[in-house]
Image (cartoon, rainbow, N blue to C red; front, top):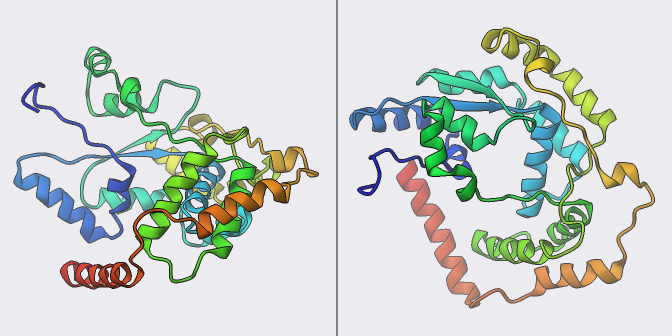
Length: 277
């Protein structure tokens, strides 16, 4: 900080994931207010099926879900994940919100984010946000298939640290495989249109309020390309799948003191619950 002008940007998906309840948001705003800092929330609005598919890939590759995309999307839709007006109000109740469209056909999100903060193009160019971006590749159908197989075979009582070690190893292995990256998994254009239609009244209201324009003009529909849809005969040979699954399920990923580690993990969870109550 001492080597800069004093302005520091800390941005993380993990940080935003912590905002689970209105009180969490209010606590954050109060924390910065006590430091004399004004809080504003920047919200990116994305094409609903693309947003849900991104969540699905994240959940599967972390071994937190093993269902199909349609089952996952249906559950998230019921939970209101694409009710963008409600999500915006979640933050707006505590501080001003700047709503921005998530577009792949415009400048990098890092630039859009910093511009919304009031930074000039010269300031943004100096910090070179594109150079510090961390790439987060999507997983293709093969990787998703393997991840779902692993999820189905992992012990139900596996601890979070054990799951995380497997997730990191899984990512390092699959990024070296051909076809690791594709646009979307398990979602074709027909199903994507169904999702858009189901939430159209919600997205239209948000676009009218925040942009004064139709939703499709603000947030263009992302084309769903998926090898499942393009090649229905696509198969995953057992000789490719089984070694990966077996390694992830039965592999040794560090020191193994099962009883001590499990006891420490449960103690940590109890302590976290006490201090967050």
